[in-house]
Structures are given as structure tokens and as C-alpha cells.
Image 1 (cartoon, helix red, strand yellow):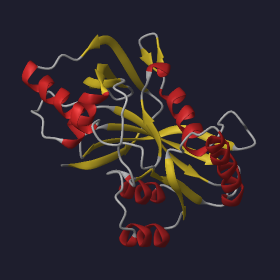
Image 2 (cartoon, one colour; image 1 turned 90 degrees about the vertical axis):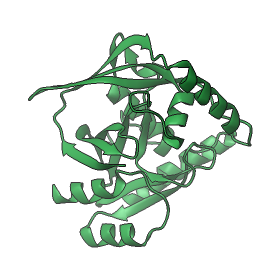
Image 3 (spheres, rainbow, N blue to C red; image 1 turned 135 degrees about the vertical axis):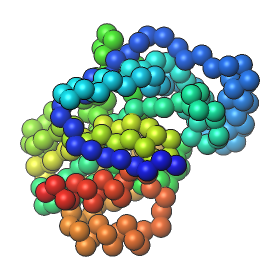
Length: 253
């Protein structure tokens, strides 16, 4: 596993969709297909939808360009759970949000049992989908706005709730060397006000027989002692960037 790297960025990140599909050699595609059949033979049923695979990165002093093409969720899932020859792994870009309340609490969650990473702690966010494609550009802001609502019930267009939403960090390296554009989301509401909004949102989902993406929510005081104690004592699995992000962002306050 590569070390997780997180660096501060400007707003100048452009994700470009090349509108073509990733072609794997037959022997690797066969393994992907067999694994897909295996993981869908148990109680969990996944949808073999589109996934956007990074094929090139161009970085200059003032702009980062990330080029992606289409693959599918079977390729992604095989990559995350199996050894795959270098050059044929699915490498994705996703968004994540470090959410902060007005009384200086951090919000993230534990993934639900019906997801591909049950029980894992991570920030709200997710992979790119077709709704984020605007011509040949991937709209990351659109993605994180949707994810914040789907996972936390936060409506970012409500200026009574959200003060700031902007990209701040780029994560690379880690378990699969995925890229993440990490947004900082500052709320105008307190922890208790957020809990009320979230509880109402979950109640509405359950009335529609829909399952929340988070099994539970973690709300953590945004100070070094609380963060360090949490990271040292909480034994739940967590996404590779989480610990480093929490401590790094604290250093920029």
C-alpha cells in the first residue's frame, strides 16, 4: 500500500471525460466477471453501473487536469479486493466532505451493511456518476452537493444551513491509490441542530423503505486531544485518508 498523501489545492481541478471505455485483456476480464458472479451470489446484490477510471493526470503550477474514461463497478470491485496487474487496475476519483458545525464539531459516518464497505468510517462523499457529466467535464461540485444530501440530509443551497463549501485538499496514495477531492463544508448550525435535521431525514427515508447510507453518525470535537483519542481508541475500520485528514486540517486552523 502506498502512503496516503494529502495536499492543499486551489479551486483549479478539472476532470475531463474522454468518452471511451477501458478495455481489459480477456484473461483479466474473465477474472473480473467470475468475481462479479461470486460477490452477487450472496445476500448483497450490487448494480454493475458505470465507473469513471483515471487514465492520465497532467499537473502544472496552477491547474490539475485529470482524464477519465468509462469502466464498470465489477472492475472497481475486483480491483479493491484482489491483486491485479499494474496498468489494469481501476483507479477512481471521488469526492469527500469534511463537515464542520458552527460549534466546531466534525461530522462523518459509518457505512451501512448494504454498501460495499459495511462498517467503515468515512466522510460523506462518493464516486462520480452520469449525473455529474456536463459535456466532457465532470462536475465535482454537483457530485458533492448530491452526496451531502443523500448521506447527511444537508441541502447545500439552503444558506441558513451552509456557510462555506469549497475544495481544499487532494488525496492520493493509500490502499488503491485512488484520488479524492476533499471539500471543506462549514455549517451555520450547531451539532444539535444538525442531529435534528439528520434524524428527520432518516425518518423520511425509512418511510419510503429506503436504507440510509450511514449506519451511524460520528460527531467529534474539533481539537487535537479529541481527534487523537478517537483515532487511538476507535477500532472500527476506516477509510485510508481519514486519520491523516482530521489531524492535517486541524493544523491549518
